[in-house]
Amino acid sequence: MLVDSHCHLDFPDFAEERAAIVARAREAGVERMVTISTRVRKFDQIREIAETFDEVYCSIGTHPHNAAEEPDVTAEELVRLSGHPKVVAIGEAGLDYHYDHAPRDAQAKGFRTHIAAARETGLPLVIHARSADDDMAAILEEETGKGAFPFVLHCFSSGKRLAEVGVALGGYVSFSGILTFRNSQDIRDIAAAVRLDRLLVETDAPYLAPIPHRGKRNEPAFVAHTAAVLAETIGLDSAEVARLTTDNFFRLFSKMPSPDEVVPKA
Image 1 (cartoon, rainbow, N blue to C red):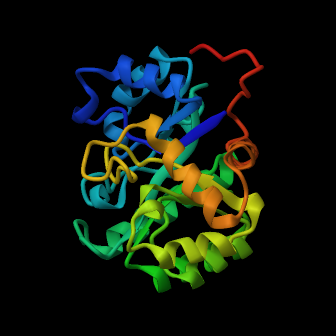
Image 2: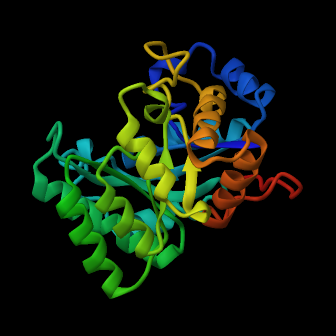
């Protein structure tokens, strides 16, 4: 069994064949997918997808790119919406200084709001961090000092120190198709140094398709390729990595029912 801990099934790229994409993932052994929210105001779309497919769950949150669009989102609203049985995470939220689509102060304010919701609910915060290592580490350390909260550094492409800080604070690190790219040896070196009990895999579909699909639209079934490269990177076989990352996933996403449990209905 594999899990795609981060994809975007609500994106237009999948609109015409969403059921087929979920079916292909199932055939590839991907038994759980988390479709990640980027705008709280579009939660109805995410929720509908999660309610349609037994294998699909979702999060609730505002991406840092959209932080200025949704400045009025409160921790209380996030907590309320997270009560839906298919919502298993908060986010994605965080800091993106690569594109700077939103003012940095708006990103930080939104990030701290999501942290508060994760702390209150106990649901994992899905963190987006790009070109913001120092500020991200500082906020994580400061906010953890106020009270621990579960989190994952998703689609990890940052430096070694942020991975170390994240794990030291109790977080997980998730690797996407970037891990498979030929010029990503630094990311593979970081993955090899992360504690085995803190590793996750994801697609971030429709983006970042792994080799041998690089340059094409990504989809959850392709998480198997990333898991295979992770296995090579850490010196385990693919079956062990599938078990390891799946166990880690269910430990972090603790609201998610395991495959032998009854899937809750809305």
